[in-house]
Length: 342
Image (cartoon, rainbow, N blue to C red; front, side, top):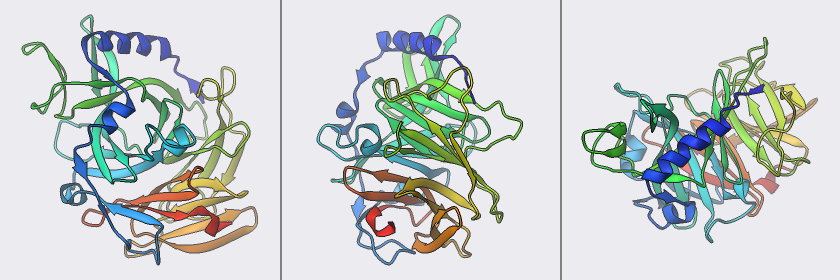
């Protein structure tokens, strides 16, 4: 993996955007949540949950926005942000042109209120700082400090800056600078989260980045990633060291995984290390059902998991293992206590 070395360039463009737009913190956005999830006591496929919620009905049923990745303030800060346990989830666009890319839900796990913002890629447009959509699958999220890592399936990681959320004009379904109106737009979303960096794989092994998660328990902290392969247990899992001071990958010119494994299970949608083993969410069971595999070298056990499962996230401050489901009509965010999988 190599750094695309766009940090300074993107930083300057974001600074230009910030000169024209209000910069908002996560605390600001958390004080401006405009949608309301509903607490539920059961999730299809799971015998019990610690806590769970269902999105607003329009977000449960929409077919062209599909939820994928999950992370939270337990990753970013090891605890709460502005007194709230924050959950971030990624949703990729699968609708009519133009491709709107990826939206990010910012949710208060306590109140279940949330709001969407749009991930954007800053660029210079005829000498003006501007931004465009990020048309990727966004299958997983990992978050350290203000840096949000988003899995970019065939490339590596895109990295976004959650400390410089920008407020834009709403009311128009378009993106970027509107010269006629003199405003910036983001497909009717009020907030955008700008990309500040990226890592690109340079391996002939062609790794895929189907999902990702943060491991705060490793020393140094690390990001794990892995591959979804349909009906094939040969998907690979990787661990990448982080520099805790900067939040960037640790290494020199090239970044090499410090661990690599074959998953040994198929249709893996999310992975996170816990208690010296790995927890893998899988959609391999038929009929939309899921499974949670607890694996290590020479060991595997299978546990019930939600239907249509996706990414995983462990909040070390609460001991919760979080997941989410993607199927339209049955979309939930839920947690169980990770200690149950020691």
